[in-house]
Length: 146
Image 1 (cartoon, rainbow, N blue to C red):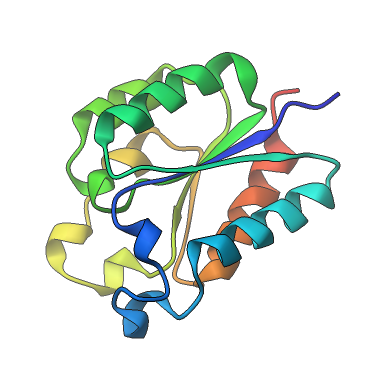
Image 2: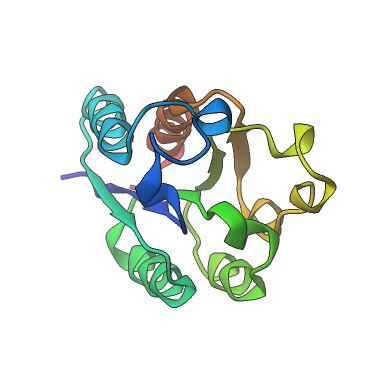
């Protein structure tokens, strides 16, 4: 059986649908989960879907993914712009990692233009709202290591 795709979400994404809907849309994190599960299922895969406001949780889940996942979709949120720890953890993951964003960071504040995650990822999908996740899951499924 194929290994699952890990979809990992960083800080404040638990408030999707409430937080800045003009930027992030009205979909909730449960809506994102459902979209990811449906896209993965179309490739015969399951999703392990997690969210944390704590950087260390994301690092631990990336370490876990090394042996348990076929690929990783990571929306590190603000940690993508600040976390060398996530960058280092990603460098140890020999799976396809897709950096995913609901908004387009390059069209926003200049501090969002640099991503430690993107430096270590196979690719980046951004700016399409929930569709970004669907595209990122598809890419992870197509590139999966198993």
